[in-house]
Image 1: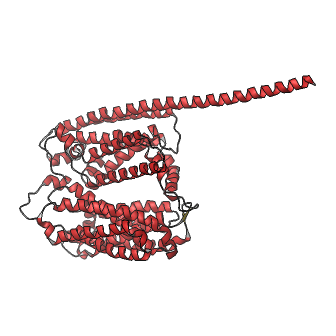
Image 2 (image 1 turned 135 degrees about the vertical axis):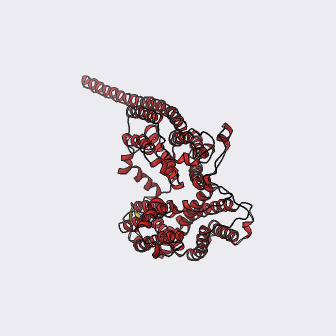
Image 3 (image 1 turned 90 degrees about the vertical axis):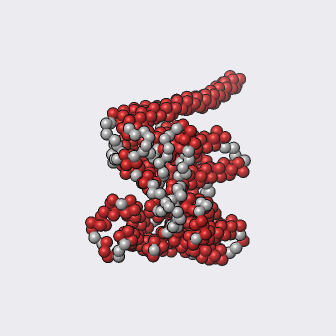
Length: 594
């Protein structure tokens, strides 16, 4: 319990300091200024302490499993088995590695971009063990885990940014206060919504609301709402120090309650039937798939749903900001974004997402939607262009601001490397063979964290590839349309080769996962795998053909625009030439008159 609370508190403090370095403190064209010295010094100390505590947390978790003291489990074979074979051990080991990397690189920080990278890394470290958290037998495991992850991220940003403001020099606090207010407002909203969702999945209408556990949840929600109201209503009318002291005190209590709730679950009344499938996958075995079930079943994936809601809120905010400025944003782009988000939700939380956990053919359909169909719609909505037009700029002339960070990221060397057509093709199609023809597929499918990483890769690879091929957003590398056509034809060929190779395989590639599930429908696992490969081939070719047509259209339009520019240049040159001839004629006439 002590290591659990200390681990959470230190992680939140480290995240807060990284937020401060990435977004709050003054910077000069990305370089941290002298005012960051105190924050950097505190970060070095706390990140080192966090690294030590994560090791203690790993050992105490193992000792709790064995029901013994830490000294009794300090054996090489026990530790090796725990960190290499047990999912919780792997996730806690990942957290230790993350804490170590943050500690090492915090001593080398010079730019706020580096702080942003460490911030993302630290967030992945604090949420990793949450994927092994307990859930109620009332169901909704994916929603419970996802909402818990969002809850912890929101609390980390909220508490961390407020505490980081307290660490800053007093003369800088007012300079950073407006940004902390924005972070606190969005974070507190995420905390409230995710907290309610998590409480609902665990308790619903059960009598556990009237137990100590239910009282703690109610108290946490009430305190969060109080601070949210203060953050949104009276923040501008209260002094910085008064508001900070109040928020820090209340939020430390909230953090302590959260640590207790994360540690214990209520004892549910009544006889509980053991569900082997839900223990393995997190979802009970659904009924045999039918057209209506595939289309209308919904098993909310809390994390995916939260990310999609957040992305939608940002997009809507950008469109509204442009509208208030008097600028027009094409309706078609907004509709395209809505279609892409809806498809992503369907492939992760809808009936397709549900059955993709239990059958390879539905997994392959979800894969195609996530990596090929939805990304095209998202790319055609021009999210980067919208961000560049609406993100805040620096607070003075020397600051890049968030918009400047995005511009520099777009023109950075890593961006130029991954947006090279060959790189995008290798990531998009090469990962198919790395995933499905190695043990990686079974390892990722067998856990929440792995399944999340796999889905994230599908979406990211698709967005990158179609951004390079048909994207209308700024690209750090200009790719000729002929090269795009060649890349698309190569992608079509590679995808066809992959599908044929998978259809020809006479061995299962799932590492025994589907056999372990022992589903009562579609019992021929090899046939299910071959059907999935055939579906992947058919579904994969259609988006590529659509992208090929779109590329030809863009090519024709580009040539037409170039032709118009050439005509305008020719007209200008001809007018200048005629004027030159007329001038010569006047000179000749004047000389003849003389």
